[in-house]
Length: 109
Image (tube, one colour):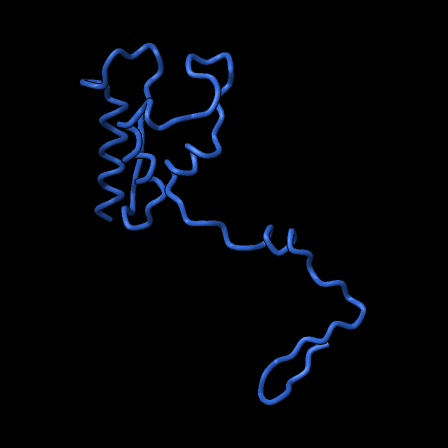
């Protein structure tokens, strides 16, 4: 039951069980971490891959910036283009050019 006493809201327990410490912990705000920190902590790669097991951003340090940019609201726009195995480079690829141009137009709008 909710009651106001001395201008403060008071909640009285009337047979309703309160949350256990585990339940409170489950509903608490998550700790703040970057995408790379999260990946280093929680991502596991399939065993059939070359680097199966726990992911480590130290294997791909050049990906730290782009990964964190995707989750940074101050960046505003981030995109990635990964060609299939049939394309050897992006120079002269009209699809890569069209995607980059669309991203630039979106950012300027």
